[in-house]
Length: 372
Image (cartoon, rainbow, N blue to C red; front, side):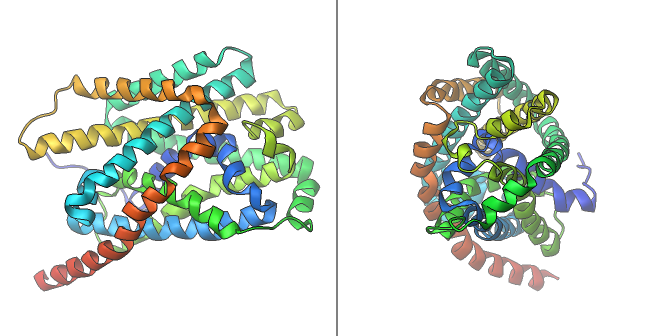
């Protein structure tokens, strides 16, 4: 059956929207990750780390990955890492599974924290709603996930933009003062930007299914560069808003709630919570879908068809494991969990794709020219 191709706009932008939808997670969306990786270097130091280091790593690695996938038709993390690492690809899978469990735990914890902050209900309710949303989307399949993730990204940008405009209007002077203070930059801010970039780069292969329609190097590399920009921009908007209440935000489990406490706009807080809930479901769905795609790909290689019942079973198991791990709390998961896998992603993905991957891309492009 012929697959309908996306428009050129979608081919350039869709992978970035998928990446942003998955990378935002519970720590990014609540500001907890921004606290852990950026504010410790001062407001300006953190901003420089995001705008320069994190953006460049995300853009460059995404561009190389998407071009590799275009040439070698590796549209899931299993086939990609087999193409780059060969028989050692399973080492990356171990790292990915650890990241997936931590991320599922973080989004489960964040869902509980946010709904509790808004409604004062038990944290279990937010976690339950999240779990049902993830299971529903993954079972519905690729089309539903792609449509929801891309649509919700537009909603996210609109709400984040409104959030920043209102915060700047009310507290713009405080934001400016924080960024220009004598101690606004300190420490090895570039290292913080790199650490944040590395573990989140595990999300790039999760966007590969949206790159299938790239017709040439310009589209593959262009969508990769846009991926970095689309991924980091909402973080920058949220970070700037949080700067208004530095250093108060650095001691909060969900720093964004500090901003809403000062804004005292329940309607905006409610709107933001709804949007954040959608992003948590996006993140969880993206990570679990990669697992189901990996299992399906392995069964295809053996000439077997993946049973329909296996997708919901895998999804439910992943969600339940995440919920169990979420008992460690949002702050603890981010501070201890992510640091454990950051350098694993760097060694098993970033270095190989920028060396072996680039070498194979050159070889592949030479083969393409020879066939023309």
